[in-house]
Length: 119
Length: 278
Image 1 (cartoon, rainbow over the protein chains, first blue to last red):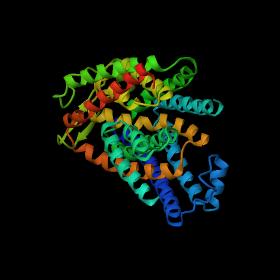
Image 2 (tube, chains in turn blue, green):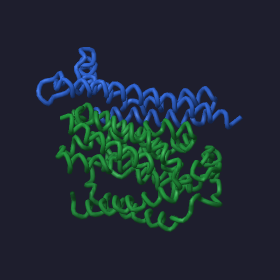
Image 3 (tube, chains in turn brown, cyan):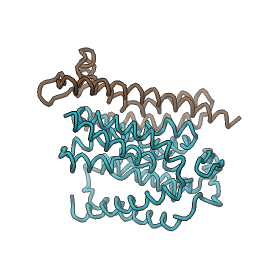
Image 4 (tube, each protein chain N blue to C red):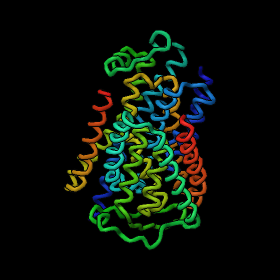
């Protein structure tokens, strides 16, 4: 019974990663092709959006760099999302030891994100 | 512009393949290639290499996890070490000059390469005891080895040693930003005595998490340039997907033969960097 449990965890985590990978790759590809075919990034000079709101705004206005940055943002969030999904999966499997371990990792990650913003 | 993007894409496919096979993330190829071949500023090159690490990690993990090469429990547990290490590294960065650490870590890595060299003829670790903590955490496992065409059952030893080296790997990625992939593979291969394929796949799996934390900061700081990062991401995602399939059909001995010289190169580079000071 242990075997099947581990199997479920693996399938769900692998699927969550695949969704993130495909979604980010398609978004980046669309943005890159738009940029290369038009030669226009949607932003003046060499600039590009670097805040969350500016990136989303660029995406909604279909600006090539805004779309690429959205795809990169999805790519960057995928591993963090994966840790979050793992907590839920381990919880569903009633594997409380690993719920604790994964939650601890998630908390440390969030803490380091906050540190990054401050420093 | 299109031509440069295609060139970056090709190099990134190669970096993704090599990174996913060795568990190193591909930064060792992407960073020098961008700075030396394309004259990209080092800060954007590091930003792009973080993207490359995340892309290698997620791209290869899809196949490695499905085929059970990745040991998720080992990865999750050891991430406690890498994430706390990364925070320690970020703090240390403000207090000490990293030169000594480059030398210390470089020597340690060189030592590990020599240990690895000694077992270059071993295909799989043998007679590994199951550490009591490893038993409690259920870190042992099994996978189907496509090269050997058999099921490989394995144990995990020296959990504390492995966790300690992972903490060191975390400090490195927080402080120096290089070579942490090789430390992760060493922690699992040399210390915990896991099969090399499991070590490499699990190292890749873990790497995305720590890189994501740094990449978020780089992106907000404006150090991730879309025209460089986009072809890198696409190339590495493609390369790592291919690499994850290639690796399973390679013998561990073959992987080790590629791994050891790269490890020696990285360790010597670190020692020189520490002694010369940049």
